[in-house]
Length: 352
Ligand code: AKB
Image 1 (tube, rainbow, N blue to C red):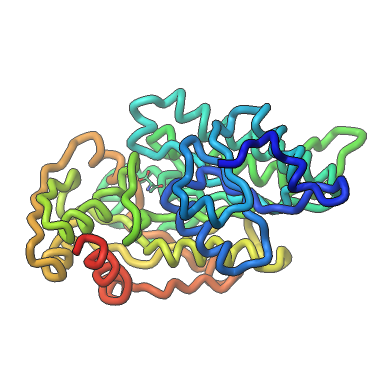
Image 2 (cartoon, rainbow, N blue to C red):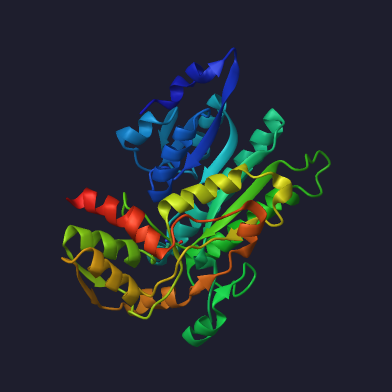
């Protein structure tokens, strides 16, 4: 870990060097995103996480900081060293963890996001260029009133059923609005207002499944947990009913979607927030597939009433027509390809 106080090495001729900032960089999405941004080359990556990144991730970053995104002095040190042109703000406390400590979740998910939005606006004012702010939101912003209505509703649009029942879902929904506010209306009445400082773009992700990492603190975690346990030959007690259905996608498709949304010309975007999805098997169908692919799998269903309630409040599918139309979202993996081409080969190799 480089010390933040060695910042002068990043200033060329007194100028700060341009960089992409990733918060929550040590999480599952950060893991994939750092690799993809590094592979695409040409940009310096600066990472922040509450824990130290592993050596492989660190090697792909120009710099990495251990600290809290709510720590204003850390952000200021970072700004003294780098000119931030783009932010991927991934840091968050997810839906299950957030229900044990809702106020802490609010602190990280909302106050952390406000700090970053403010930083982005200040950056734009200081270097005179709009800062791109890429924000992963979630299906947790939805709140289906009942399992019956969930079944009838099918694929829901971005503006329907936005009545989340978790702190995480409330936080994500509010931060989507904050992003839109900073993009279009920030300091609306200020005499010295600089318009258009921020370019906020958000994707509402479904449950994500990575072959390389395991999730923690979420409620869609039963999908990836089941698969990893099956491949490792471990018993798994699934915490939702077999008929539970929510949308999922693979991590590589999620990373591609983030990069694609970040790259598209702004004038093509008709909205700030987009649904995306790939497939939506029930937990029972998921278990059947996992057992077929990993014959040693031992999966049983032991629904947890509270976590079930959370997953029941999420839609069984989302309408991602706007993402497909506006920026060409097209996931590579449907359910079959996800298992055959990505999950089974990579997870098997991991537990061999
Ligand atoms: C969670 O389960 O909290 C997350 C999500 C769906 O955003 N994976």
